[in-house]
Length: 411
Image 1 (cartoon, rainbow, N blue to C red):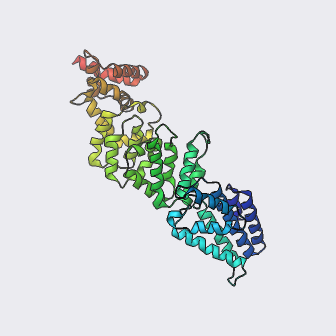
Image 2: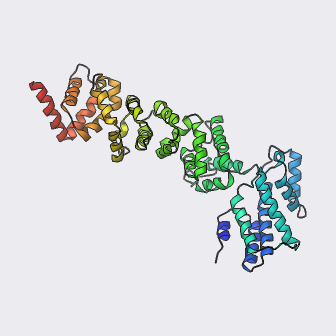
Image 3: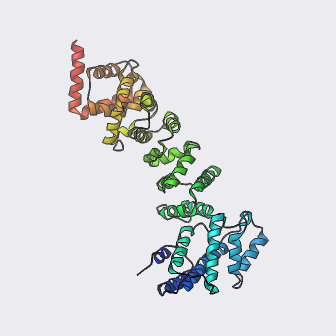
């Protein structure tokens, strides 16, 4: 029967030398030789760390001479294990692994248990020790990388988005799965900040896809909280792209009223942003006393092409109806100000108005207002074209419109 640790090993990209040591450790474990199992497992993990250092570029915190000396020691069969332990235990300013003091202490604990096994000391080593050490490896596998787990994840993300190394359709999930084991929740803002700095420093360089960063909001809850905190305190331009990719992300900001108001007040500007606005309304994220103001902002600013395609769904239409959006639309279009007569306004909102008329039909007031505008000296051409097309393709609404306008003429 395959052990969970065996299955995990198969999913990792591990050097053959280290893999063989782990296999020997697993074989010993299955035969109840627990001291040998722990010893081989420790050597397997040490070997992984050794190759991570040997295959890394020189860290900025070390001089070239110091780095060359480390590399030389790690290639020495008599020195490498001791040298590697020194590297892990090094002070913060010289620690190329950049691991926490707590993680160093855990590493030290397992080094001493390895010594118990190697030198036949009195401490008993059981299967529980071996299994616990395997869990330690799995939990911290991506934290023990040169320059730290956060830097390692950052480099993986950059490489994933670099078409020279990774195809555009490559699944990023393997990187996302590593974040929780390599980056502490409280350090997630550092990773996000690195990504922002990367994009800002070279806008024409390797891009970071919104679709990738949006998936950060589906990590464990403590990571999501850090995501929210980061984006609330940064330029709105960084979150708006994520919301356009996945409007449901906006629900994670439901405790940040000022952020939400700023979002709809200033930053929803494209027709696709009606999808974000729909999420805000559906999740009651615009207070009732701000709804009219918000509706008017959307109607007076956003193109309404989305109302003519399937992106504007029936559930969205019901939410807009319940929240009074269409009432505000008809008030602005056909009320005292008669915005329908304004070319730019009527062109921008023509699809929303047609959507409303198709869904709810005419009233005498609306039919009369439209007739007056379209029969004026300078009718708004864009709206007139779509309205005529609408009547031509909808006999029920055409007859309804003609009935009201004919009655008006007879009077």
